[in-house]
Image (cartoon, rainbow, N blue to C red; front, side, top):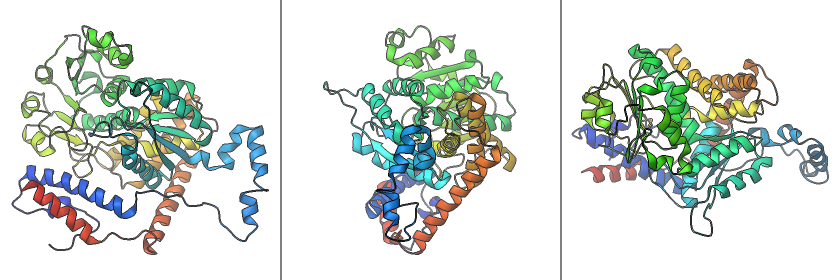
Length: 484
């Protein structure tokens, strides 16, 4: 087997030429999973802590610690807001999870989420210059149940050390109570990336998809497959941008959401789902195949596929249908299969397919903008602003059916997004300080540039060692053998 280019520019070309589209899709998933395991073992995780202040002589220890630092402590004591300028709090996010719904793998136990949470921290730093730390917590109570109140109390206790909280991979219905309680009761932004983050990037992709097919948000018929934290928030934000609730239908594992779903109404913990039962699906449709007939948009965030979304559903949709199949790690239907069934635009949550609708395009820039103006919360209006910021950035570059979203390597997009979100925070009255759009943009670009330069320097000097190509070849062999 020949050596593999470390850049991994085109994964499809790694596999035998006689592999079918389905085999290549499966092989890529196996390859990426195996390489993730090997590389994480090689590096011992993805994150570390390094100082941001220099040491110019022995007495600088007395400046950074005792006795000098006493002045910092008493200054913050007298005005807690000075902690944002006298510590790294203004650029520090806690990524908090109880690991009960990790990607498509479900409950992975508290430490099982560390790989994902470190991944969020890595993307925040690399894409927007934001520092973050992974905090996977044990939310079990004495009855052996996951208790949302334990997460709520934990986050409240964390507030003095962070500028924002990123909630992640908390199963429903606990995720609703955790987010809504903390958004109202905390004095720093609490952001649930599986909900608001997924909602924001999905709306961004939908905005541009509709621009391409020349349809208006107010006129479209939308079907959402899956009714967890992601799709319920997506539905709420789509309605916020002008969609007609009478033309929207959501489905969970028991059927359509509508006013006759007494099981949802009876369980107060699912209040977010019940709100949508009251607003949407007036025809009380319970069969998704029926709901898809003539639909303009199908958004699936349900369970890993393939073969979860059926080709016949897509074939029955309206003109130039839009299909978002965003389950991780495997979409509900592979893009090639959706296109063969007649989909005009297809998006997934993965970067190895066109049109990645993934939170990674949202949370780094959104949190950066909120941090720079020391926001007290992230409003739905800020999430919508971020959606339009992403969509408009891509539109200016020239959108088409295979490019509806910016890509993760389009660096300036994150700075644009941060600046737009910061201005909306000021407009919404949730910013502690006021900056101009240019000030936020320039500061974000400076932090991104410094982060990239630091990583490049560490790679060049082998402080970050280059993985042995044999690692990639081992992962590739595992993938090919797994498909044959």
